[in-house]
Image 1 (spheres, one colour):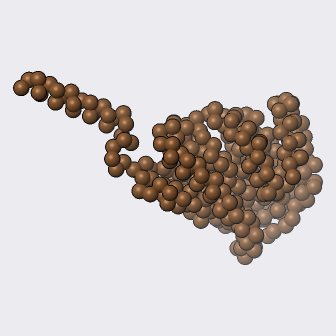
Image 2 (image 1 turned 120 degrees about the horizontal axis):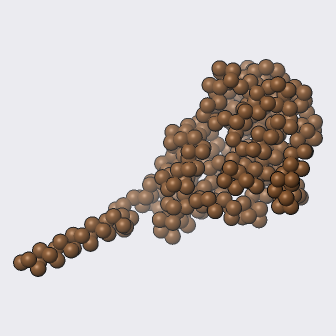
Image 3 (image 1 turned 120 degrees about the vertical axis):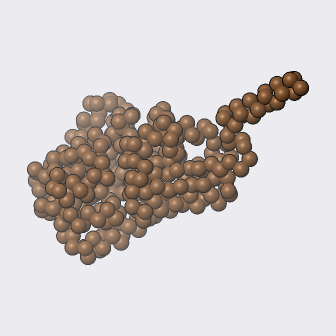
Length: 332
C-alpha cells in the first residue's frame, strides 16, 4: 500500500512539473498575442494591426487570439519596446531611428530629406538594407518581422506659417526621442524638444511647445488641429516602422505558428502602407475644413539646411554611415 501511494505521489509530481514547464503542451491552451500601439483605433498603424489579427486568427484557428491595444493602453513606445525585450508583450513597432538608442547607427536613417517618397522607402527596406538592419536590431531581444510605413512628416504650430528656415527660428517643436530626427529639426532652424507622442496634445495646449511635426494621419487623428492653427508641408522626413516580436516569446511559439505570424506581417504590409497613402491623399482637405491654414514650405531651402547632418553622421559612424547614405540615394 505504501509503495502504491509513493508511486502515486511521484506521478502527481511529474504531472505538476510538466504543467509548469510546458503549459503549451496542455490540450486546449490558446496562445495570446498582444499588439500594442500608441495611436487612435482608426489610424493606419491599427489598420495594419487588425490585418495581422485577421490573418493570424484565420490561419491558426482557435489556437491563437490576437489582441490589439491602441492609444498607449499598455505603455508608451519606450515601455512597449522594453515589454518585448522582457518577454511581457508580443508585438509593437517603432521607427528605425527610434531604435537608435539601442543600436546608434540606426539614427542615420532619420536624417532629413534622405528618402524621396514612399516607394523609395519600400525599395530600401524590402531589399538588402532591410536585411542588414534586421541583423542589427535582432541583437537586442526582438525579432524584426517586417516594415510598416510611418509616413511623410510636416510641421504644425500655433505661431506662424513655416516657409523657410528663418520662420522656424525660436519655435519649440516637439520631435520623437531619436537623435538625428531631433537634429534634423535643429538644422532646419527650430528649437527641437524630445517628448513622447502621448504627452504632445497637452503640451501644445498648455504652450509647453509651440508645435510639432508628424504625418497627416497623426495630425488629424490626434486632433492637433484643435491646438495648432498652421500646417506647413515641409515633407522633411519619411519614416519607416519596424514590426517587432519579442524574441523570448517568439522562441516559445511552435514553428508552424512562427510561420503564420511572419507571413501575416508581410502580407499586412501593403494594407497598412496603402492606408497611409490614402490618408495623405484625403486628409489635407479635412484639415483645411477643420480650420488649419496650409502652406507649402520651401523644401529645397530646408534640404540644403540639413545637409551638414550627413557630414555629422560620417564623423560619428565612419564609412558605414557614408555607405548607407549613398546606397539609399542610389536606390531607384
